[in-house]
Length: 148
Image 1 (cartoon, helix red, strand yellow):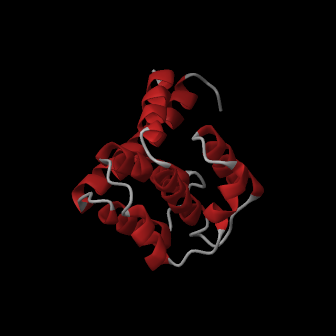
Image 2: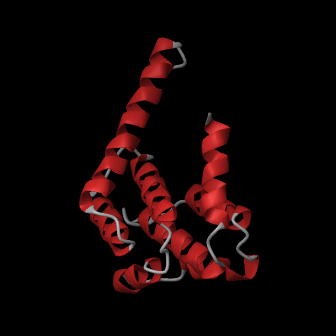
Image 3: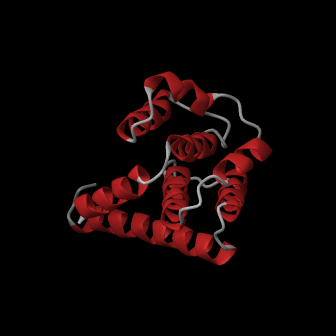
């Protein structure tokens, strides 16, 4: 099942042009830094994602370049593919929850990015709730299967 989701996600990303992919990754990087810190693991994750999405290595610096929030909001408006917009919100929510602490800054940024791509606040909340449910489900599985 995980492979099917990954394949579907990669198909959605493959339909984006290079500038849309950069906007996707820039938004992802901005959420990674919304808590005031970006560690090497996060940078490596975004770099690997960019390369797997087919973004040329010489454009990787653009992802991490200081991008004011208003400029980022304009960039993500390039993503006019609804599936890609929902995927980006899902990935940003997963990233924001990865440290077990969702900050107000992360929540607001994800909401603004989602709305800029045409998603309703209700849809963004649905995706966020799904991510939370998924995290709980995976943690419960660790307990059940004694993987703690």
